[in-house]
Image (tube, rainbow, N blue to C red; front, side, top):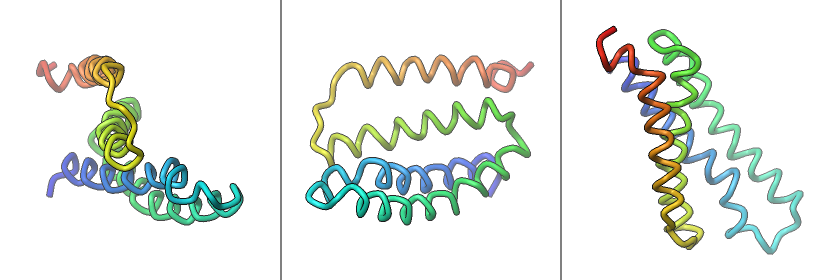
Length: 118
């Protein structure tokens, strides 16, 4: 598996954990004290870091830090939108589309050297 693919796969998996750590408690632990939610979220976040740190180390061999960060943001939004709609039952709005288009612009500018062959 090449480094780009491995980086993307690890970042996708880490983002699933991150999204649940940051937002899952809003639905599943809303009846518990915030400290309990925080401790459970930290446990989930540990799993996220065990995937995210290797992903960034592998990805940094073939991408700049800026490229890694924008890739992370695109993956985050790609996972967060279905999570918020399907799990948290939030309404899908056009604002998600506009945010996604802005991120695609950021991807273009940070990866244009590779995209355009420069």
